[in-house]
Length: 82
Image 1 (cartoon, rainbow, N blue to C red):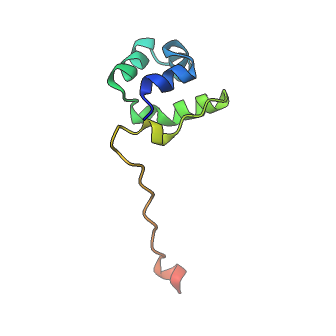
Image 2: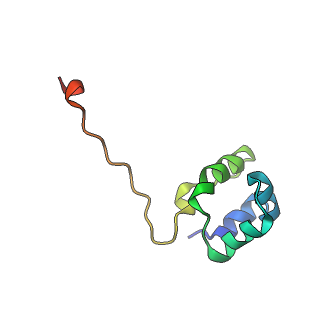
C-alpha cells in the first residue's frame, strides 16, 4: 500500500505539491499526517503530477480498505433498444 506521504514525496514534497495546487504547504502536510488526500484535490494532483512525469492513480488515493469499484453499466433506454 502506498501512503500519502510516499505520494507527496514522489511528487517533490509538501512545498512542491502545495505550489502545484495553489494551497498552503501546511494543508498538504496534514494530508500526509492523516494519510488522506481530500477527494476534491485528486484530479488536480493526478493532472499536475502527470505533467511532470509522475504517475499518481486514483487507486493510490483511495482510503485504505476502499476498493476501486467499476461503474455500473447503464441499461439502454427504450429508444436505443427499439
